[in-house]
Length: 202
Image 1: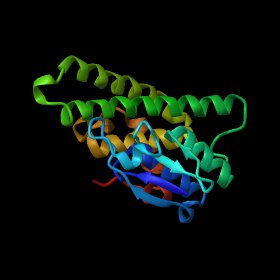
Image 2: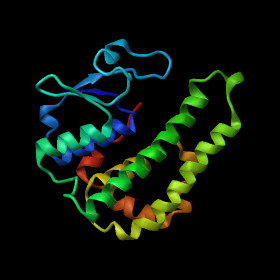
Image 3: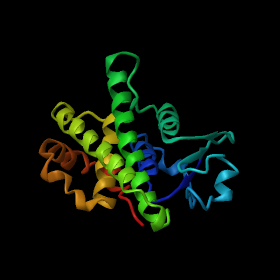
Image 4: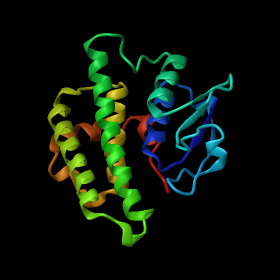
């Protein structure tokens, strides 16, 4: 399997954490990619018309995207059961994944607004709206964190990647100061080998 990869992408990290938990890392070849909303990587676009990472090429040559599909595929291949079977546990994990992906979507939009958009075209209200999504998402995560326990599934993996990305790109938020329950849970979860092996770079 081949994975179009950026070491700074939280979505790539989510897939790599799943690959570690499924013991599939040795079967993955990482392909460098320069995903960008304007200067699109044509090598990546050839496999994924959206030009986004992560994109997975299966051994059969099928291109899979986005991270949600790739993670479920890796879980299917590796049999780690990170996606619970049908029932309340599955809907909880998928809703947590959606929450985490939504926070990451907002964070990426803030990054693009500040780094890819020309300064004269930046819209402060737009950035404020995305930051409010992050704040609201963190409040929900804080409320839920005491119930996570030692659970390892696609929901908790995604939320851990969210907090890791905020540490990496949004240090000014100092989110631990106002979210102690999430901070305590993350300190335990971040110690997992799969998380330590996938710390963001770049």
